[in-house]
Length: 219
Ligand SMILES: [Zn+2]
Image (tube, rainbow, N blue to C red):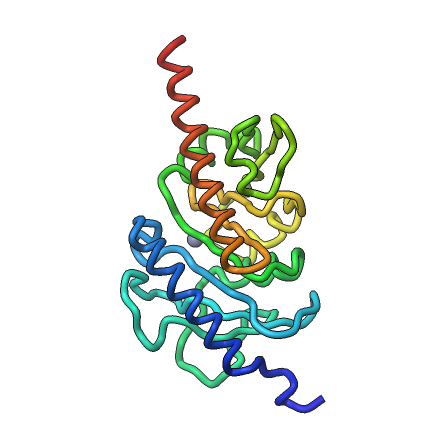
């Protein structure tokens, strides 16, 4: 196979960058990238679990701004596919693992207050329980009075240590994982679906937070 055959089409790469730019701008306007945190990726080209490529946000950029160095293309090991001085996000290995396990088309990760607080609130349970809330449908789960458990994994400064924790808890039915006192990873078949999932998770975290607080003040 020639080198060319491994390369995604230029227009596919540009589409991925354009999708990332659009989501980045929207999420930045919601304050979801405090202190250059968070990262976004969209998969590009052919996929099999052992070989794929994706466009991801570069490390350390202010995500409220658009610059020519915002994104780069990396492979299934998180290594840049092109000659570049840009560094992929520090959490790229987590994206690699989620793509390997799910074959998703896009993965979005943000740090929000609600995801942080709720991950600590339910840490001993290792999951956030939610039952019967309409927006569970936003995650593609349509049963009446559906019950979900959003998994929580420990957070480590050493990112490779987080990867096997995600491997252990990832539920193919539920497109997201919470990192303790860190943030949410959500994914979908494409950028549109990953965005819908991320927004649904955030809604559910805020709902659970407010509901738990309300119950506490009542009792
Ligand atoms: Zn993060």
